[in-house]
Length: 321
Image 1: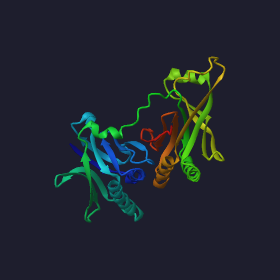
Image 2: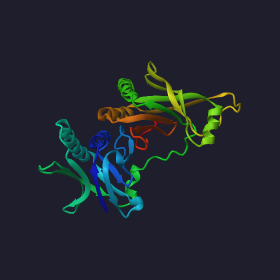
Image 3: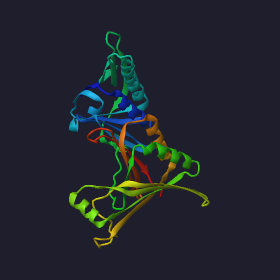
Image 4: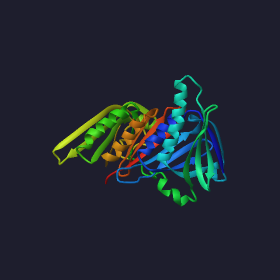
């Protein structure tokens, strides 16, 4: 297998990997001709499953890959701390040159071997000066059983799920709210709700898509202590994303509205850790989608700020039953 790429915008990739490093120690990296993917498996009671699928053109201006694996894929495990350190060096070099009005050094990423050990090599070429190289040890995936823990959860029963959209600017405010609530309870109850017409559901079913109803949704966060202290925060007038079919208990009269509601209780420490990682890394995002699947999971999906909105980060927070 062979892989070689030339960095174009290392800063954003550094921020993304930095946010992942706050959530786990080791990640699964998968490279294909179109994208670079990261997956972090839960490592403790306060950690969450994270999957990031990113268009490689967001960060690289050259990208060449050759592999005998399915879909021309290269898969390996690496320490996030090592990846973060190497990417920071690439980012700092680009920023230093730009601040001085000079031309940033060229940086390359490639697979290599040192003493028989597979490496991901970051090669920074700074004009006529000496090159700087960072080698990140990695372990190639040998079989599908090794990546089972990094596979996304199967969400077969989503009939009662409710999804609201969060403007990315709300993430920092949400982090602050959750941090205050964390001192009251270890459990956070989330309720997403909205009211839509049967006509909107009919349109969704006909189009086979998930239309968005502006301002029709609401998100409520509640923590409680000893049934005496209750703190409640509400985010009203959020955009509501519809599923393609109405709930079974919905009225049959086409003129009546359908009220949607989903509730899930999660570890507040898990959510706080995710939000803190995102705020600290300051990644450029377009918006977030929060989906409550009762009895299963709370899914937070963030869309990166790219034209096609095809680059995403997904956080899976299991519910507390």
